[in-house]
Image (cartoon, rainbow, N blue to C red; front, side):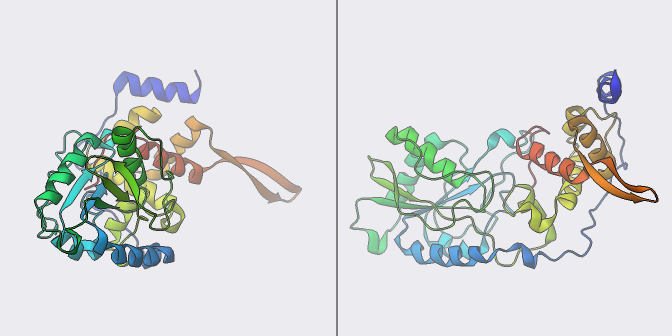
Length: 321
């Protein structure tokens, strides 16, 4: 049957086994500092966004697994005087057992707030309703609506814009989409998404607050792809992901990788991931008789695949906030 077959058979026969108190109650971040996780280009993007806010009639704030950690306090002043819509993207990856959080108590500001949206169909009518019932000040004479889309990196802002264009204009994509943070690096020209009412969206670069609240918030952002993996480290990210899955009793990883039971040991889990996926590397070992190439399990590659599986929803539907 082989090792992989035996692991899968054990999981199928007995299922994962775990009990209360078997997992860590808290995660040790090892004194990590999140200051280095804020790339320099984000400061420029944040300045551009704040300069463009004056021309915006409404803000559309896009979130995914982290609707609280993903909010940028630097933009709260603008949120306080403009209507804004909160969009929960990637709902197919969210835990259906956890209801979308209310954003009213999360520093949303004083402006009109639409209900949390999880469908592109309802966004344009809701935005039009909020703008028409709110003062537009110096923008009152403009018949067109200007909407700014904001959110942390890799949350799906460009995908949302492209979806709205297809829905209302039957047009193809107007902005690049990528699975890594930093695809949109500058505030783009306005993109029309609707004719009646005439509505334009402005895609913006994903930006993080220059000072993250704490290391755990930064880790959640990293797991969602808002911070590049190498800045944080795939090893600790995989360990924190395992800690989170176990704490929420999300044991989909056990079945996905054919583990005999749930585990709180990231080394144990990554060993099985590497075995099942064939993640190995050749290492040169110096011996008394010469150099010998030895094939070893590649734990770094296994950690990367563990993170990819989570982001693709293959380990279950999870909310980090």
